[in-house]
Image 1 (tube, rainbow, N blue to C red):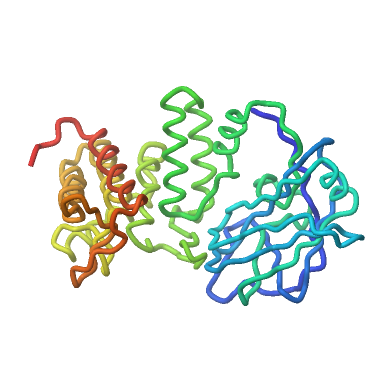
Image 2: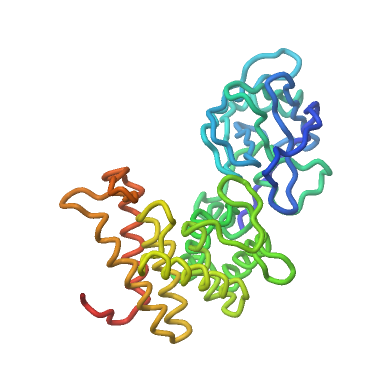
Length: 353
């Protein structure tokens, strides 16, 4: 494991506010509000190694606005730079590169964060007790020069809670990446499974029932918020095949199948996401359990989504009135290609229709 020194900061001076109504932090994490009228100070007990450094903060509550956080040096008020935080999702880190001189001054005197843009507080992760054991990399910190290869640091971060995302397609992509790294020998299977289990522990209660936050940081208990939410079950089926939540996913898919004449889709659109977030996990579960009906449902999702293609035009979504949106959008094409290649890779000799 690559040894990185994260010099975690203590945050002070913030207002004592409640988490916004209808929102929730992921279990075990803490956050502070940065408001327009109350800057927040960051100070260090343990400075990073000498040299240039990166000042980082991570978002704690899903953010649907454009924010600018100006970083000034305590004492002089000199501006060190600006963090451009636009439409950030939970756990997303942002960083400001500091020269060796600025990093040394920041570590010695501390810095202050000033919020601009938007009209509500910006919530950032922090460690109020000074002994956070979930992820030092997502706390406000200075990261000094790194001598070890970046590839090793990347794999270490991915195979830990540093790569945690909200329970949905983003978390699913992380979990699939962990399995892929193990599959190609860049990460041991045991370590990949350990990381996957640690991630999953964030999203289920003691009885194995879903208890998580959706893509708006809204708490969800026992239910699945939509088809984007189900990609993680592709990996869970391999690591935790008997987990009770897999039954919840199968029930959710079957319900939508019956509502929409075989199209497992959200009520207001047929989307490319379902090729990957539904077709792929259904194929994995069908093959793993030897149940052809689930495999057939997976293939049906790919066939139904041929409608997204219109000559050389590919739509991310088709609305109920036939409107096609986000045409030739890169992310939409990626959903379709990922769904197609991942699903067919786990189904031997799929019937050609």
